[in-house]
Length: 94
Length: 509
Image (cartoon, rainbow over all chains, first blue to last red):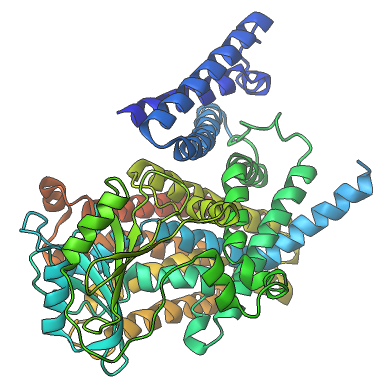
């Protein structure tokens, strides 16, 4: 259960970072975020990532928790990039 | 950084990746399979899909069963207890005639019929770290080749990071709406950057595991030979048989003593040496499911009276080494962590495969040249061909009757035969058409395997899910997911073919 929660937080982390990424916003023709909104998203992403690490370290042994967190963060990043790519790329003609 | 250095590194990244890419893909792919070696074993060895609720006769009952069923040699017998991933006992020993034997025993002590398959643990695992060169007495050469692949991975990572100027700015850039070349390069960059930490620690720890093979001089400067060195850093009892028979205490009593010494720790392996001899001893290795460090605190007991002879304590250097080993081979009893290792390994495969495609796409104008054709044939064989060979081996495992002589070797023959056939096919049918056909073959093969499993064993996917046989169900579901991914990739490749066709006709007109 703790690990599932940790995975959810890792996905949230990368989702927030991708959403705050100025290049991704430009690609969507969406309005640029204000500096405060960008910083808020990044701060929330940091808090989410730290919570995910704490949960993973509780569910597994500390070392394995850290490995789980690192790999999970990487995979969540790939997922965020692919979802963004499909979302934006799918709505534009090639 | 000067422009020329970046260009030089770009050159190294491109050509190093092209030359060693196939080997690196191979290491990542087989490593990903090895993460689930025991799960694949259950799929490939239906005889070992047993009921886990039967009475457990313990190590002593299993050892007596082995003595009844086999003519044990005078050497050592290693017993592996049931675990969440292996529902029955396993034993490794040499017969009286010297034959190396791996057998399974049910919890109630009854023997399991010979599986007649190497499974993943005896085929893909040694293939991953030694390329099976050990079978020809050249294991060290295999370690060196794999170690070289690890070093090339590290060099590719460093050069890739330097070559890619906008690493952080492009972190989430996966531009599906742009050209095929741009999309492929984005996929290469995203999967490469995101899997960077995993790839670095896996490549480094992979090389570190065989540090003695790669750098023996440090050891041999202080020790007369490697045996003395290993005895010093891993102290343990190692005594010769006395030649006089003696009674032995129950193995279960020894296991109880080991648990008490480890403060509740469980046995991972029990080694019974010279059973029945006055100098017999038993080595117990502790299971370490919740720590990275592979510190199994070996305990040696006198088998004749159960007295503890030696408690192995690792020094700091050995602890560091075992930590690196544990990090690489993920001994943790966590399905979630295993899946992450598996998926990150597959992400590493995606990096290599997309790198190949980027290289080929950039040089499409040279597609008529023999060098290009060779690169494409090797690239497709070392990526799609390896996947096809694996699927073919699994199909052979389900189709070749267990009664056939040397069935395990026939499975291996199918693996290497298909792999070679894929190389020949890649040469004979270059271009997107060849890749498309291989992708279709992967999709069809992967989709057919769960059906083959259901027909030959009766363990259909809905049944295994209903019974909670997650090893079998998980394997079938992963195969179906593979089929789906290959079908999606084939569809994309078909679109490329249609575009190429339209372009060709436009030029002709």
